[in-house]
Amino acid sequence: MRARTALVTGGVGGIGAACARVLARQGVRVTVADVDEVAAKTLAHEIGGEAWGVDLLDTDGLDGLRLDVDILVNNAGIQVVRPVEDFALADFRRIQTLMVEAPFLLVKAALPGMYERGFGRIVNISSVHGLRASAFKAGYVTAKHGLEGFSKVVALEGGPRGVTSNCVNPGYVRTPLVEKQISEQARAHDIPEDRVLSDVLLTDQAVTRLVEPEEVASLVSWLASDESGMVTGASYTMDGGWSAH
Image (cartoon, rainbow, N blue to C red; front, side):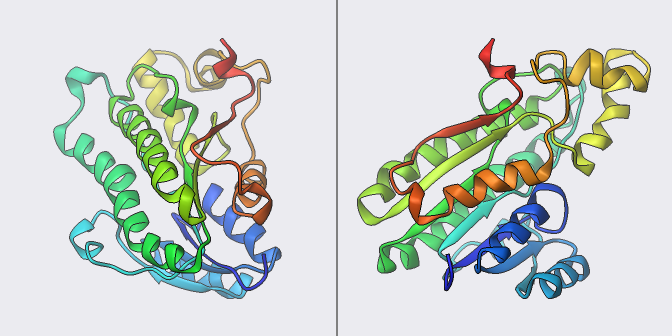
């Protein structure tokens, strides 16, 4: 993995930070991309990488971009928990912009360089919600399903030119994004917050615990390696058995 370069979006916390750290430990030069530029610079300094303060919701600013990276990890995401009838159009559009349009533009920017070098690894942090639906998450579920389809298209186009494209599909991960959902889920389901994990989030899992960010990062690091060259167009679940139903 030495001499490779990587870009990790949403890179300052949770899954993103874990991915940045594990790739850096393997010798990859990592660019930490996040809307929080100060935090991105702090993590980049820690891992010997670089920082890119960027608002991925500004997709006009991404159009026409050129990225010279070997590994692209599309991780940035947001969540809104509301019934469909109460789901604001602005929130729905914001989720699609960040979690579908931005990955499309970043992949578009990275592919020419990957094709020139004959090597590329695109890893999209999807979710079990890219394969299954849950109530009250119309924006998120729609975006993750869209990301799954886009990833497969890139796999078909990029395969003959040395570029793989895959999704990682964790269940609920111990991140600020999930912790923020606890109060929202309690309101949506009209239950106390201390029952959200057992009664809502983990009810469909055989392994009833949250996924750790480092577990997701370990799979990402393998998908980014030379050894994964025959794996493309795939969706790797890490959901404690949720999707086995």
